Image 1 (cartoon, protein in one colour):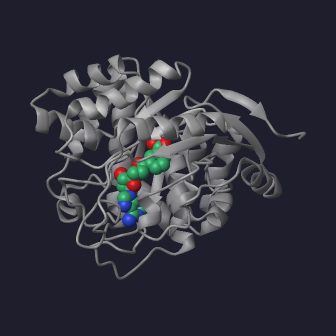
Image 2: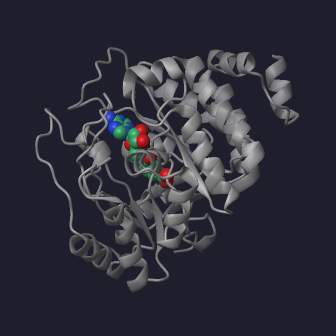
Length: 356
Ligand code: V47
């Protein structure tokens, strides 16, 4: 196959060639992706010690796949006070968290200061903690709701202590599918524009893709290639994170779920196509830890973190509500034949657990 020759020569594939990779058998595809992974990272697998904080589930938007936001299916609304958010930050940092991943719903009742000041209060008390906060969907919501430009919101984030942006809100870029699953929130072009502007400020971010719902393979390829194009220009994406759709307690009716083979092929294809995004993250929360460990042999070199508490995907059925202990994480990576390496939020290596 010509595409295999192109991959071995580090040449880029077209959309059609990339789509045809799904027709390869799993092992051939896995070998191609694994070779690239090993070339860059050997047998190292990254993880970080982090804490997810979700300050509110009150949301102006309605995404059909979401089970987290307060709705008919989830009537219990909550909004944390700054003191409650600070208390979570204090406890998490005291137990070792080096990153706070703070993502909210689009709550029109609290004001932009409630969002921004939470970051500042945390940063004032803990200047060294890494704050990864506000998805591009939240940035777009805050800009529209409070009459600001994207530039103004991004500058406010920096002024209030946000270090990097998470990859959420990307969902799937194909406009037709996007309209069906999350009409009304940030468009694909806007999502990409916001990340480009963030990168132009010298900042880094991640990119996700929600897959395994109503999208087709070609939509995944399109999504990945749009990210590759932006990364060529802006260079600020640290990691690509395929998020496997979780099906419970939401409004999206999905009949066919991807097989484990299809999921692993998607990881492998992402690794092959994204020659300019270093890290492919198998987010164990959505793929399950077992498949995330296997994904290490299909291009993934990062398993995200210990999390401590997870509310978004666990609301939709994922078994992640209480995160995972560091010891368990390290043990699982080791037993799967890889070397656990703790990284910081920007992928600097902190500690290798090869000998421990
Ligand atoms: O954008 C919502 C997804 C995302 C469901 O940047 C669902 O390091 C599956 O982006 N099934 C938020 N997924 C989480 C996110 C993330 C997670 C971990 C690490 C990083 C990072 C980012 O959660 C949303 C949406 O795509 N999501 N509902 C669901 N039913």
